[in-house]
Length: 336
Image (cartoon, rainbow, N blue to C red; front, top):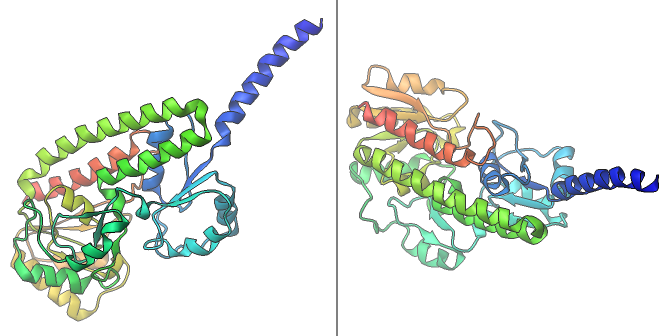
């Protein structure tokens, strides 16, 4: 009778133990793009969580008490770093578990605002040299069809992103996503060695899928590199650098501040000079300014989503973000 009782009990305890083991590693990321990268690494093992809700600003988010508790209870926490999410610094000082600012990862390719060409720099050791050469041209695939006026417009018209400061939108370069995923896989394997092989297999599959995606985007975007486009937020330089693109102007500071009349007039003039072109805004809403800027001009208005709004959190979510970005750019520019 004891044996009959103990066998089903053993099965239940085993199942409970297995569930507990899977639930032990809680991964929390600050923003959705990092969550999508973590989902690729954790596929089949766990589901990463995200701190900021959809539509929240990674620059100016106000933490709630529940957010602080979530940060403190997570086994692993990944954020871009102080150049994007300075609001996190005070609460992270009190956190006991690992907190990884991915902007400081070795091997990461970094850009600084004011870099007008594709060349980027790797790791913290290169920052000093990078600052000295931030405005030099290094890459043969870079295109500056709009001359010095374009570079001046970029430097002067995105006041929130001052030249020389770190461009923290680093997840938009697939090579950086690999570096981040590699770090995540290593830390997950250390905490959860029973699933170490799965994390490594997921990492390798992620890298292979990114290779295929890169080839597809390189081919599709190759014919659009000399076509002019403008953005409302200077957030896409990493992606542009990867595929030989370069925006011709930025319409507002950080996509949030309402530009003054002089700035609007200057941007309208740039649009007139550019001829057929595209203007890209961020979701969820189309800026009212867009309509007044393009009225009567051969300009198409479209959306570029750098944050993955509406993308399901799955193993392939990050690739979907990048593919959507490339597809939106190509679709509009191909129509010119």
